Image (spheres, rainbow, N blue to C red):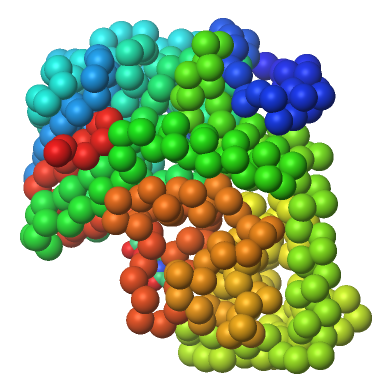
Length: 436
Ligand SMILES: *[C@@H]1O[C@H](CO)[C@@H](O)[C@H](O)[C@H]1NC(C)=O
Ligand SMILES: *[C@@H]1O[C@H](CO)[C@@H](O)[C@H](O)[C@H]1NC(C)=O
Ligand SMILES: *[C@@H]1O[C@H](CO)[C@@H](O)[C@H](O)[C@H]1NC(C)=O
Ligand SMILES: *[C@@H]1O[C@H](CO)[C@@H](O)[C@H](O)[C@H]1NC(C)=O
């Protein structure tokens, strides 16, 4: 394993030279090119034995509708009810991957690719047990590669395909996933998220005691459309938006990665993009208050800039100016939440970061956050164009495009694409765009 920055330096240094000419092109590698991060691993803390899971009182049925014009394989990964790593096999039982102490990622072999029927068909599987930190993966016209490695705490780490690593062994495959956790006590939570990337279009519906719920996701051609919009944006403002578009060597778009993932591999990108805007925000709110509706018991709190910090009443500490990567990821710099932070601080961070991503802080009415409705989001530049374009194509406007995309004015609908039911009966996932 090489460090991510070293790994990518060659590729990116080459690309930066002709920033607007090319998107990011994948070159899939082998096990030694796998990069282990918090985002692509599921860890167990103890050595895994080949025990069988408990018998759940109710087994979850998953219907997989194939609307993709080509072959699709599904994979199910996660932790079983004993917190052991599991991968579903074609015979409907769990495989228990075990690193057996290996410090180099070992490929998980076995019958773990679940082939879907042809276009228009529905394939149904039943999970043998409850599942947490679960994902249902879909790969179009290819296979995904999963690995297992010693986790450092005596347990095993499942290493999953990574959307952020252009050398990941699965990088040239068009794939996507839905996340799910289904426990005896709380039932099923499932979501589609675009916080890290947009890949193979997926939609979901859930039926159970709570009735039918849906999150429609993106249409079949979403990746190409978003790539085109990012290219136009790059041509107009000179920023490397087009490089968020990841293609295979033939130029076919595979996925779009979030600016937070892109700036973690190319820290110079967008570095001055927000500077003037941030200075104007700091200037505005040094002479008038910014009101944050905390939407918790603290209600509205007033914030003003003094001595370079934005300070809010009742907050245990102030906020320094963010930089671009803080705005994309909402979890670093002034947006990093620390153990001692109070409820006001924990309420201000999401609302302030969302206001930056949506660029509503300098608009008329932007002095209350959240306040303006979604028609005011992303209406000025600089803004999070990745999030703007995703929301433009979402069929029902739902699905996170940045980490605090669920922040909304009181009474407005919640933009999260999460579905939940205490007594679920089946989850249906539609692959390759909605059924017409
Ligand atoms: C799993 O463990 C590895 C170290 O062995 C660590 O790098 C990774 O962040 C962990 N993943 C999670 C989700 O905590
Ligand atoms: C679990 O089963 C796999 C495959 O049969 C085997 O390779 C592995 O060594 C077993 N692990 C343990 C801890 O028994
Ligand atoms: C999506 O669901 C998974 C599994 O329940 C959860 O761990 C994750 O935090 C959720 N993500 C979002 C963005 O809601
Ligand atoms: C939006 O819904 C999600 C999923 O139900 C929930 O986790 C989140 O807290 C909600 N956000 C707000 C601001 O209500």
